[in-house]
Length: 341
Image 1 (cartoon, rainbow, N blue to C red):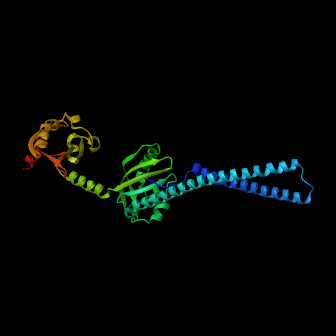
Image 2 (image 1 turned 90 degrees about the vertical axis):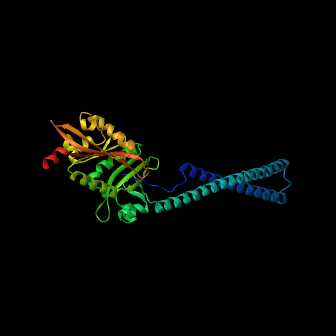
């Protein structure tokens, strides 16, 4: 399954520590400056008192006072200047961090709006098995409240038959493998299941998985109904892509050649060249593709120890852009029809 979570951007630990160090050093310098100025004041006061109350001060003491007072004054001035430089530096750093915080908040607002407006089903999932964020479209598709989706382990919504495959998909995501087109079924609030096709990727640094999905429930239901209609037909139906890979066939076709549908799908027709009616129709397929018209002809299928004559029609399947994407074939058992007449 896919999941994703977007955490609000925040300042990292080194940056926080650096900012604290700036302000702490600034405060220390201010304390030193204050202590130096107080010392100057006290020394000046002591010198004045001594000059009044005591006998004339010796030259040695005078020199000491004369040297210490300017020294402390210079030290205080230097410390004050350094403090001002550090305070300006700290202020610039603080303003930069405030700007980053503002950008992070704006990014979060943008993300929230994107999740709210996107028609794709999007989610962010954490390692704890909970969704950290769910788009409005996902909430509407499943019919649960956002609170329910975020506070219920998402595996509880997955169809029991799809949980093992979902677990394996998550393991691959955690190894850094991107997932595209992974399908599983989610239980909606009305008790029915929605088939979702996910694309997902994991962010190991943030510890989350980001995912977006499409609701393909109607598409899958249509495919099931179409297959049921094809299987009910008494004639042979075969569909392959433009590269010769079988994409669909009905039960009658599988029975005629004695193979299961699973073993036929995604196989190349050249793999079954032993069947005359498949290999001999290749030229007809090319003719149908070139002319973009159905081609009808007779052919013989030799299979399971017998031969059967078929009246076959090969036709191109064209998408909405006018491009041929598949080739279809319908074969009617002529011998059976003749016997019934």
